[in-house]
Amino acid sequence: MTLSSAVNGFLGAILGGLALGMAYGLIAVGYSLVFGILRLVNFAHGAIYALGAYGVFFLTSRGMGLLPALILAAPLSGLGAWAVEKWALAPLRRRGASGMAQLVTTVGVSFLVQNTLSAEAVFGSEKQVFPSLNAFGSVQVFGVTIQSSQIIMFLAAMGLLLALTWLVQGTRLGLAMRACAQNFRAARLVGIPVEAVVGLTFFLGGACAAIAGTLIGGYYQVISPTMGSLIGLKAFSAAVVGGIGVLHGAVAGGLVVGVGECLAAQYLGSNVRDPMAFVLLIAILLVRPRGLFGREGVEKV
Amino acid sequence: MLEVDALSVRYGPIRALEGLSLTVAPGEIVALVGANGAGKTTAVNAIAGLLPCRGRVRFQGRDIANEKPHRIADLGIRLSPEGREVFPELTVEENLRLGGFSLRKGALAGELERVYGLFPRLRGRKRQAAGTLSGGEQQMLALGRALMGRPKLLLLDEPSMGLSPQLTERVFGLLDTLRRQGTGILLIEENAKPALALADRAYVLETGRVVASGEARALREDPRVRRAYLGT
Ligand SMILES: Nc1ncnc2c1ncn2[C@@H]1O[C@H](COP(=O)(O)OP(=O)(O)OP(=O)(O)O)[C@@H](O)[C@H]1O
Ligand SMILES: [Mg+2]
Image (cartoon, rainbow over all chains, first blue to last red):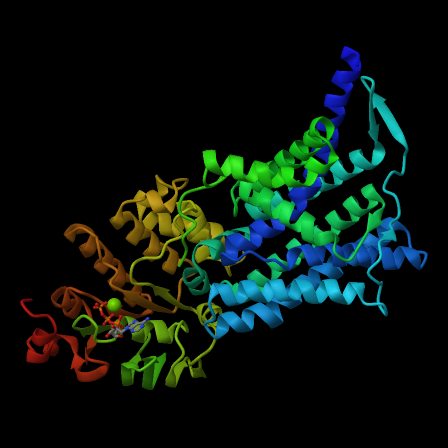
């Protein structure tokens, strides 16, 4: 192996990892936002990711273009996530159910969605070929081959994450979200419709997951009903690695996991790829128990 | 403007409030006094919509019992809660902006100015996280937050908690000003004496029931008030 091909292999893994990692970040923010506001790990999130990809798959198989299909499927998936909150989780909270009851409910919803997608009458359990995101072939940068799908994935995910950051940090709605994340009771007292804000948080997370499902589906050009379970866990790890409840932490965690797994695949073999996210999770939490950007005091009233 | 009739609240088997009836008129300060655990906080929390309750709560002729708290807030009722409950990780200014959550943009700036005028200490700490304020400063912030948007009815649960005597006096002066501007105020105070001196009328609560009520001044020498505040 020549020096330059070694450098190229390394750079290729880094760039590929950044692209994939940004998409992980887009999923991870969904975990982070919901955790921030409810202190709940939403295990249905991976299923919404799959749901979004299947929505786009369905529409494109009916002749719609990838972008219009996504523009339709993303808000619909967001509505799906909103519905889970509205009809499964919020009623539990109103009746004073424990966090554990909500957690188990999200696991149940996840299986429900997955099994519905894989029903013979719906899409079936086999993998499906997904339209390619590699719209413009590939480019060479310093001798490293980068696919346009990677560039699209990176830019689209980054753009959305920036928009989301602006929403949370720079708007009145985001201020309400941050207030709810700290104290529901005080938020109610100043006139914030807390349940609506929680529902909107699920909607945003679900829509982002659907977009990530489309980006990653288009990158690998294959989807399956269970596609959300492993990636969901990876993105959840990413959220924890970055410091759960912290928006930029989710992005950083996604990038760490994405780059980590691509480097692992490059140097340790492709079967090390998937476990890498969890190795990183354990290693980083041992050093920084609250994650890279985690704060003290996620306790909440 | 506020008419509470036969209000009852239970926490599971505990009856915290049994048949509370009271009224607050515009431009009136009404004190709610009673020993620890008498049910004062329970009463204002129920009026603000935070607790499920039985009985009637009417505000400006409109039934608001068991209405959602954000709706009640939007009608112009603001609670400055026991224990302050500021948003600790948000800045002072963000906390105040949240107080004016339902205001239009233009109105918001004016209200911020007004509240900073009332509590100049907060102006200097605009960008400081509320959780890092001193206890007294947090109390000012909780009050300022409740005052954003000029509520018609203020529910104040121990607003002088943690304030120095001078500052308490200033806050009481502020309440007097608000009264003259027509705001209705329901005031809970640990310090019954100055509260009864300020208030127009008062209700004395004992284990969830009103045991005495009437003109605040007359109640100052009432033995039931003394019993509620042993030693004061
Ligand atoms: N969440 C709760 N669960 C069970 N009991 C409660 C709860 N909150 C209050 N109580 C009980 O209800 C009664 C009234 O409490 P409340 O807080 O209204 O008293 P208070 O008059 O405000 O007292 P203090 O002067 O100490 O603030 C008390 O006996 C208290 O123990
Ligand atoms: Mg109290």
